[in-house]
Amino acid sequence: DRMSADPKRIFIVDDEATLTRLLKAALENAGSYHVEYSNHATQALAAARAFQPDVVLLDVIMPDGSGTELAAQFKADEHLKAAPIIFLTAAAPKHAATAREGVWAGYPCLAKPVSLEELLACLERCFAAGSQ
Figure 1 (cartoon, rainbow, N blue to C red):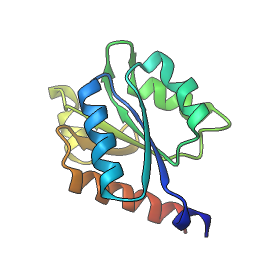
Figure 2 (cartoon, rainbow, N blue to C red; figure 1 turned 180 degrees about the horizontal axis):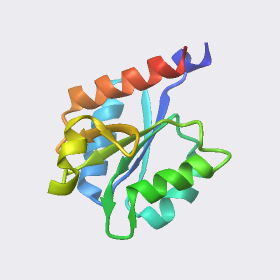
Figure 3 (cartoon, helix red, strand yellow; figure 1 turned 60 degrees about the horizontal axis):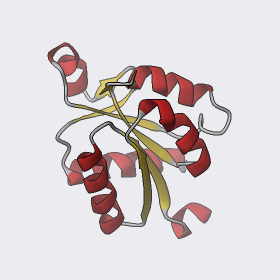
């Protein structure tokens, strides 16, 4: 099928530029992933629409917007609603309990700093679920 031949397209939204660059390099080195990112919540929707990701990694708390609001915008968008969302969070105390259970606002959630192994495992679960 098309999915196995083409690299999976991963879109990252996080205000930490260093983190997004590191994740892009790590994911592209680790497997057949094509990664783009936006460091600004306000520009993320347009950038994602242009990129057409297979999955979105989304920071929960950003200076220019909330991850939960952005997730709602992605899910309301005709071109993006099919892409699974995985939240990344530095787990501020009030989110820590839900983040630890691996779910935030109904989506899978990984605590930062995220390990590459953990992230890859989560992505594989996402793609496995989507291909059924």
